Amino acid sequence: AAPAGAPGPRRALPRRVAERQLAAGEARARYMYRQQLVIEEGGGGQYRETREVIFSPTGERTEKLVRPPTNTLKRLRLTPEDFDDIRQIQPMLLTPDLLPRYLVRFKGEEDVDGRDCWVLELTPRQLFQGFRMFDGLIWADKASYSIVRTHGRAVPELRTRRDENLFPRFTTLREPIGGEHWFPSLTAADDVLDFRTGPLRMKLTIRYTDYRRFEAESKITFEPPQP
Image 1 (cartoon, rainbow, N blue to C red):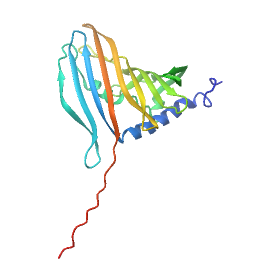
Image 2: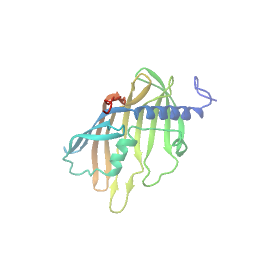
Image 3: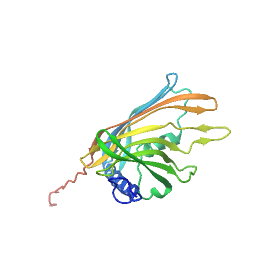
């Protein structure tokens, strides 16, 4: 049986959401935007940076720091995994090729800001060191299958005898851009990381603003005839 109003068998829903996400990711890759990141630790330390995602004159997508980052964190040390998660996990791009790596459970229906949504739980089937994944819930709009909200955390956590690398639970909200696709607009986290040296509160805020579609400009130059 399928839930009332569901689009066919329940098993088809994750693939439709993933296909919609693939289209959204391809569309977002043609946009420029500003990304403002603030990480705070209990006690007042802070990391702050602002990046512009832009295109080079040759049409290549790249990032540019608006100003040098400021870092007054004392107990938190940011790792390459943290910055990988900011680019890949917090925006949460679920594509058909990644779908087999997850166990997907239907969790019901819920209203999100006036939109009827399906709620799906994603759990990694297997964790590999060096391969970042998402573990949590996604809300997909019933009308378009677009993801409008995610809540969870990046995995795996990394614990060794000498080091720990822990990650907060976060929520990412999306908004419609360009009238068709939903892009990330805000990621927020306020969590306590349970380090062996003692619990440490971590707050994370990422704002994605100024979305604007990149339009390649073509110019035709007429050279005067050679004498």
